[in-house]
Length: 574
Image (cartoon, rainbow, N blue to C red; front, top):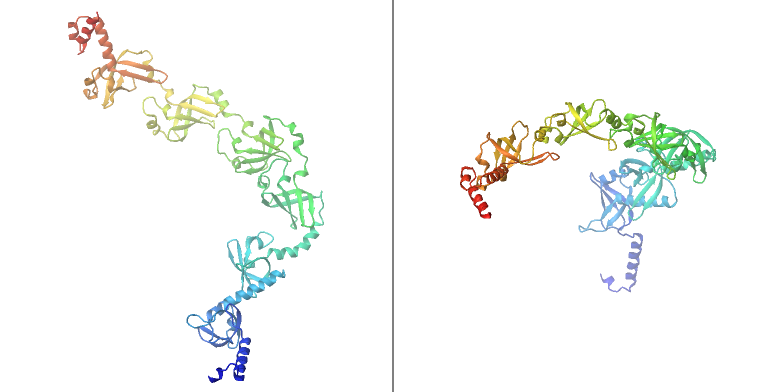
């Protein structure tokens, strides 16, 4: 090593020059794509020789096969690789062929994008929102949006899968390394010249016959003309009446005549109108009157009703709520079909909003009015239970499409209404009495108990403080349950109304079945309320005894423990 002690010696300078010349030939940097030469192949690995590296990089043979480079796996073949690490912790060189392919592939895509040149690729698979396209030259993967597959909707793209074809690069994200391509743009570029020739055939004012409805959008409807051109009819050009969406007027596949109202040769667009083929009906809307019957033609059936024409161009809305007097959720599809002519009544004309509303039910006889004429309040009619809920029955009366309301409280005078309700089911025949008819509200109320004598009439000739005889039915802590003689109704005598003395006001004094006298404390015929009291009867009899017997001893024979005391008080007052 004596030669390197003196760096200024001719030998040292010659060695430095030789070393620098050798390094300048092989600039090795991490992150660069370099070519490696295959010098050894095993079952699992491929060994490369790269001039300037101290050891041989190793590649997994499966990596090369998955890239489609099986043919390149032979001694002496050059393979581009990305030098990731010159030396890792194990002292080995780390390289990647797949990453090198992506980098060089991206450079090819950038070059094509900047030059606005198409690239060759093939659709390899479907994904959410579109497809995956593989660049044939480099194997790079790109995204093809569903809207860019073709210039017309395609239900099946199986014929396009794995077929080499041209694509236009429409977007590159250099930061994320994502590419977006379009097949539609390639197709459209071929058709552009042909489309210009087709549009030259049309001029403003032309009438297009039998154009077919192709599709909708929120701003209009697209028609196909003779299979060679798609034209737009804007929402405002569909009808003189207000239209919220084209599907209110048109059905896919229908054919209509159109009038050309605009031709744009730069954008290659033709605008058309349907409403301008007929005069504006709102100019003579005064000829139509509210609440008058007119003939209307059903032109479109929707979930919420139907659209009808009073005359060509004058489209009206028949809402589902105006279809029937009695049915609430009736469907127009079950009542009409397109082309039917029906009688209707105009319910609204708004010239400013260019809106006309009609009613089908108003042109029919109101069943509630005819029901009221035939069955006035108080009439007893036959009916059938057609529905039931937790508190009422609905009864269909004869041939009328009216469900009369029968509340559980109107089922019986005697039992609990909800308990009585459980005895009835759909299909039961009943005789009911018409209690109320509200034509404006479309309601009829009927009752069952009103068809029988009212047991409360037993009290018609009774009055307050009158004594009646009752039979004790049962007892509980709250009082007594009693039934007046020859009456079908039960009443309660509260515990506080059993006796004057609190000690005697015990329900347990009675076992049930006894006949006792009591007084009527209150009668309210409007509320159907009666209050009975034994205590009141004692007070009445006590008062009568005081008035009849003035001597102290006379009261001792009466069944009132406090009578003598009351007589003494009376004497003192004298």
